[in-house]
Image (tube, rainbow, N blue to C red; front, side):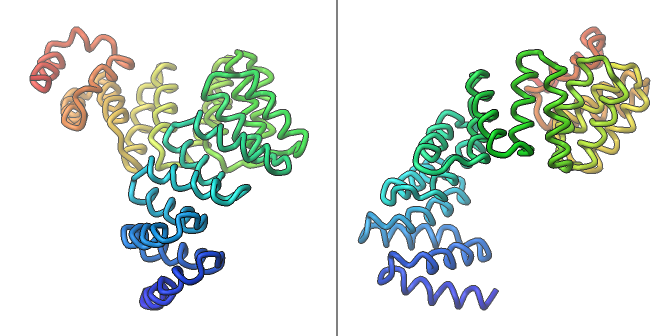
Length: 318
């Protein structure tokens, strides 16, 4: 820690004299990541930009500081200024696009990727991400076109196969979608979301054993992700395997927590007859987020007519 503090102190004195020193700004960024002094760095780069507003490296670094401080709009604008002040600043385009995707701003991300694609040689990673953005924007034909371009450049590109599979799934062409997901997993077996989508596809195709196999793969790969556990528990619940679903939910709540898991667990406990524990679990869920209470009826519709459950809902909604 002390070494990074000393290094940061020495480097910050140089930025005003060396605004074009790429290595200096790279080392400052590493120091910020290690020290977590995001507000201090934001103020440093703001002072530099007051003097030298066209310093693209400062705009890039301050973008990361803003992002870590949760100031998303400021971060996106900083990355944009970075590639405006230095045309073809590839890292700035990618940082802007990736942050926009994280925040669900897919149209904004697509603008960045499209500009990057027009300025640089074709890149299968960029094309696959463009495909993902188009898919999120419900433009399936364009999404497929981008994925196919990516696969012409790199036939084994796992993300492109995954996104193309998602496109076929959106078109309800489940057989084609499965083939693409298999290719994606062959290229990158450790991606939980690949297994989750393949499980969903097998479920549509009426292949419960394969569905269950890939749902388990997904939770083993990402036990901290509530969504994977929830899909596994739901599959077991709707298959009538209530006690298996209960065991899965118990495991899930040892690894992670979410209000949906709590409501699902409460529903499962009611269905298996463990009413006392079910009431306690439902109470935790209601305390966490009462507005999500309709979730429980997805798995146990009969609870709409349960007097005790309705009494609890009435109490927490007052």
